[in-house]
Image (cartoon, rainbow over all chains, first blue to last red):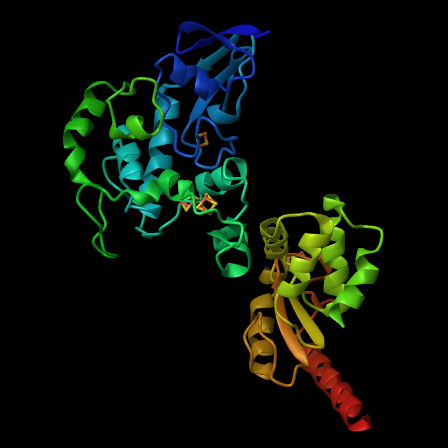
Length: 227
Length: 160
Ligand code: SF4
Ligand code: SF4
Ligand code: FES
Ligand code: FES
């Protein structure tokens, strides 16, 4: 039998089945917590850190990723405080600097209120979100790709560097990869990277209603409850 | 040769995925490196996906996927050793041997490797040679060490 718990997210009391993550609970109730590495039907590894929230326990708040936090009875969560917004903006800024050639990441940056990128652009083609790796092992059951190396040499690769014989060519890995859709202004060569300007209307909205849903395009592909 | 030698390592460990790291360690010790062939065999015998074997082997510094020289000179580049001049020692070693760190000399005698702390910071700068620890290293000790290994290596080849 399904058991339910009641918790408070941003002042709203919501009731959700036990076992859900705080992020899932929030999305289900239309509270948008920006996220990147989370995919509804995959396990969560908390690699992008965008979904951070404040978890208030006995009046003290701890910051943690909501996708890896399970709901508990009488939990108090704040997803949209000044402190969280500031941290999240910085995380998003680091992400665009790392991989500006992604619509999803440009969108997230705008959504999180990034106005300028203060870090050097690296123009990488992977943000190590691990979506492809997880879908390959959990859905395709193929284990054809995975993380290799560690630290700054960490990358996604197939076993021994050549296409695995276990790959069933389902291409879900590509579908889920945030890097597979270019920003609206097209591919940016190294040296000409910038924050995508085509979402300026969103930028204004994000300004006027800090922390509110701006109907980002992200929502559509990323299983936002409003789409 | 390889399958036979792997056999003794895999003995009693077949179909036990949790033995992966132990098996890799033994192969590393026995062969000096872990070849693709060995990884495929391990994956088959333990029932671990090849990706997983490759991922684990590539993660740990202790595993090497290329053949290494007879004598592996491991230079500690950790914080404590760094402030005591590990960088200078490393450039001295690469200069003396003519290879970069992570590479092996043409005669197959030396490999240079770096680690980020050997856990004996008080003895720094630390250099290990095939696991034997040389503490409080300085340029002249390092030169002597390399010389003596080279001499031993030459004697060995002339003996044969
Ligand atoms: S296309 Fe191949 S690598 Fe990608 S998810 Fe499917 S099986 Fe895995
Ligand atoms: S390849 Fe794409 S999906 Fe896979 S980890 Fe990198 S950014 Fe994520
Ligand atoms: S969605 Fe939670 S860390 Fe990425
Ligand atoms: S820093 Fe060299 S042993 Fe710790």
